[in-house]
Amino acid sequence: MNIVKILEQAILSDDILLKEAVTASCLDYCSQNEVSIPDDFTPTLFLNPSYASKCHIVDPRDLPARKDFDSKEGLATLVHAVAHIEYSAIDLALDAVYRYPHMPVAYKKDWLEVASDEIRHFKMLESLLHQLGYVYGDFPVHSGLFDAATHTAHSLLERMAIVPRYYEASGLDVNPQIIKKLDNKRKNKEVKQLIDSLTLIYAEEIDHVHKGDRWFKYVCKQEGIKEGDEEAVYFDILERYKLLAKHRPHVNVEARKEAGFSCSEILKLGAKVCS
Image 1 (cartoon, one colour):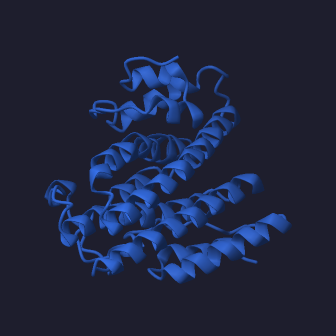
Image 2 (cartoon, helix red, strand yellow):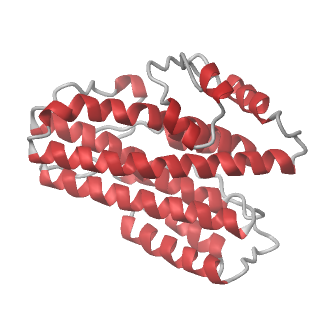
């Protein structure tokens, strides 16, 4: 199997069923075989996200505020926003396998498993979106995660720091806050479905961030970074990407600890206490 060729096809495609089939096929293959990569392989730097054919991409500042969850449209905007994050995460997980083929088979299996989870999350949210009378692409989106993947394409160390260890970890902070805001509306069937979906996503995203943490530390070791210096390297990367100044009203201490963050890191990210 030419794994990089079919992964490239899946990353470029806007067909969720194709992404699902390729992910399952690659995961099955990697579970039973050593993976060989063509000697002349050079990963493509993708110019546009695969969802560009479905969605109107705008600057994050131009996205409409999501406040009214009492109407079907209001709730649908929230479902759509979360579905978009999950869709984006599918391509990022596949790209993590495609773009860094020198990594061990355990790394490939980890990110193919993440892609499989993200596909399931997206399909679950897409189904709820359909129940509300909408489809993926009905609301504008931003390309923040795609841009992060593009900016870190040259460095696996930076990719692991920025995507799972920053953006996905930030989701661990935000997700419980969304559930809290929705809780008093859970008598609404669709709201209850969304809460259930967010609860499942939250539990599985802890594992995704933990995988990112494991491979971040692995690459640190491969690059000769001394044990104990990983934290300084992480914050140096966040500083270079101008991410340290971003305000974090809630830092989920327990989830981040479970995902591999140290208390020292968590406190630097804005938590008041960590033990």
